Length: 359
Image 1: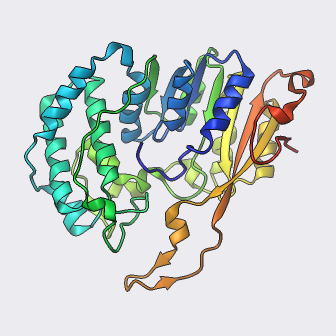
Image 2 (image 1 turned 90 degrees about the vertical axis):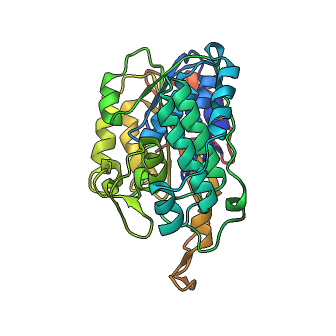
Image 3 (image 1 turned 180 degrees about the vertical axis):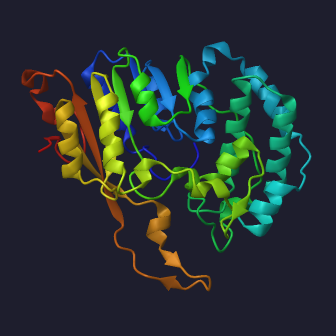
């Protein structure tokens, strides 16, 4: 799994327990899927999962981990494709120059291999899900040898030790079961979801930072389109224009309210943290109109880049780190849920702090 700001790895045990406790959940939708980590956890629970995100790289990860069914894929076919790709002769082109010479996200030796493998995938004209499995293998291989703190807004001044390792393609762990993948605006898809979707998981962007911009290299690696770029980070120029309403302080609340009004699922599960545009109290107030609201607070470390701090071009540390830890909130909204059904609710969502009903 690639490194990702906002990864829900620490929340997954809580999310899985919520779903088990609710019972009767057969289909779930992850509207802001990202790396599909949550969707994978739900699929492992034998749910029919709908995975959605506007990023092309998330769509590829979804086709590999959510849509593909291990029961219908022959492992030897995957292994044969990866063996073929591993034989690709390193070559230097646009990708290596851009992300290894002009910028330093990868060692040139690995950039050349990434470039060769990606070109080979294009020439093989693989059908789905093999194409997405191959692209996922390449993304994850590149992530293991990058030189960042996990974000592609910048690269490290000195090479990360892992960047010296050779690029290695590994077969992704494809899961059994069926799923669906979409690349749509979340608010648009919310209006189209069938009532048969029992639970919707919402993890919207919570501040001005765009995930599209934070992971622009994965977007380019998937699209393979040699985009116009800008700045030291060599970002795609469309990073300046492809932004969500959720990245705007003025628009985020209205966008979220519109999303909630469109959902018809019996249960809505929302994760959000204290660095967002919307406070705990504001979130709870918006959600209470949708049904019975309960919430849990979880304390966790900030992503490594935030803990390291900010440095100027001379390598001098500038400014101060405001805080080292964040609070993540899980909100469970259940429609038509009687008070007797939530008796003993302290045990419904196990966490570091007691489960509490929101104000």
